[in-house]
Length: 384
Length: 123
Image 1: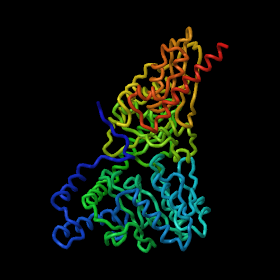
Image 2 (image 1 turned 90 degrees about the vertical axis):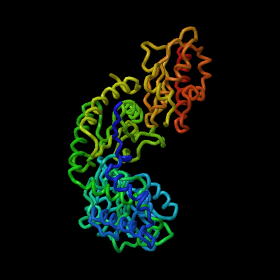
Image 3 (image 1 turned 180 degrees about the vertical axis):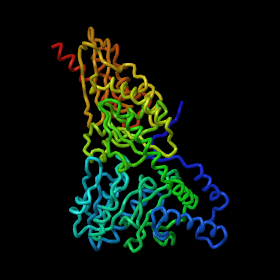
Image 4 (image 1 turned 30 degrees about the vertical axis):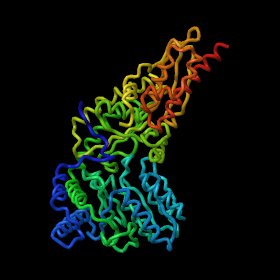
């Protein structure tokens, strides 16, 4: 049976060239970058070369890039450390209602530590509104964190406008760019962003490695204590093979032709799926949607069941349904864009990569109507 | 794998999926907000469940549980069918992730509702 991977929003295949770049760092160049010998020097050089590549990809300076273990750590680091370092100034933090779970859980924890969190509404397509943001900022606000490219709805928020509002009010602006990195423009020279979460495994790099961009001059202290690694901002022996893989992945992904390629396949997929009766696209269309994301609600049937039948056909997908593996609540992100719990429970997310082929999209479009039909046939909510 | 082979097999080919024309009773439980709704159709003769079908809006576990429940209930006297427990459904499916256990409970509730409706209609 064919195996088709349309869950690239969860994680991606490593680009074979990334693996190739990493391999020497396991068995030959395995030194500790802090060591004062040739092995250490080799590792240190790889570390700084990689740092420069990641920095350049967002027009930052190398000393503004801190390597971490991934998106979750970067988000935790940014929110918790900004909160505690700036608590003299205020205790109010603003986030959108469509943040990733690791931002939401961090906020819940910060609330218990005495911080006040405001959860900003988004519109029907998932966009945070800069005017609404401005209205919500108080003289106690120290940080705004708004996701760049949404993992469920594919919505790409306007970093420039949101950042301008934060700058005007002298409030730090953080964005979680795990899904959007290399897929939408991030440029710290043009956009007023103070902190950016990046990771490798969504861009055909390895798992367990990410970065936090911290604008020079930002008032933030180390959160993980130990050695003097990463400019004293994040202790722990650097994951050199991971960092090398991350940089190689970023270099390969930066080619803009990938965006056009994925967007074209995404639009073909959306068009094909919307030919099924009573299907709704969730999130925006066009260039304000992540080039690799499609998300639908199918009337009368449940998301996990659709994923199950797609899996039987060799297609990997995901859902925002309550029945999805680990929760019993429908996706709060889909509810935030105005979907009913029923619609959220009936959702399916298909996420592409630059390795997805036209044939794979055609095959998906060809099998989905039959799956939807057979599930509707056994649904108490569907009348032919 | 998250689900047992037996669960996936039933999900793939549910034997009892569908509806009965002119059923003797119907029972529906659940709420699409929570993700699962089961509707059970019964054909009863001399207090024995002659035929049983289901329509389910729900996940893999909900569909497999519905099917398992129907198999356990078919041919039973209605009062014996009421004794089917969620554990019987789970055992029939091999095993069930703890978070999906409520699907098997929903199965027994749907059957109970259908039988209650049947008894009421006979009064």
